Length: 153
Image (tube, rainbow, N blue to C red):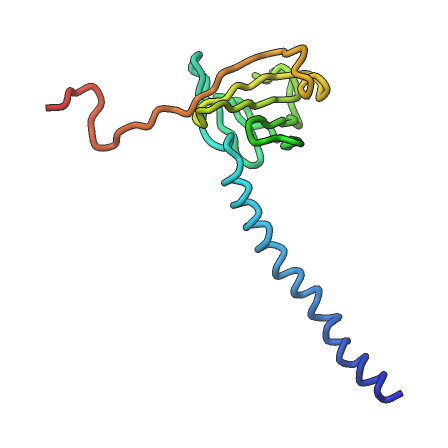
């Protein structure tokens, strides 16, 4: 009986320590996952199209021009990294996007992608009944050392 009491008293400390350790390490794993996510997610960043629209995609929202940012979920499955499917949340009727599902397709150039917009997930997965199609590219990098418009000597 005394052996059982000693054994259980050692584990009573663990009952206190395990939740404490879990609380301490959960935020660290989320930070690591976010950094890995950003590295493996080519669509994060600033983009523009031929019509002069500006697009910004972060890990939590997508925004076009000065419209209110819209939250989204990346619901991509079975992708080789050349396409992603995003589901818009809290979308208003006056939004730039005319559907709820975005299919982002990358080709050989990682600085360009095609956004196809669909009303249903089934349409997005089957690539049918496209509502809108927009080509996006990374904005040109500006040379910080040279003033614009002046020729080099």
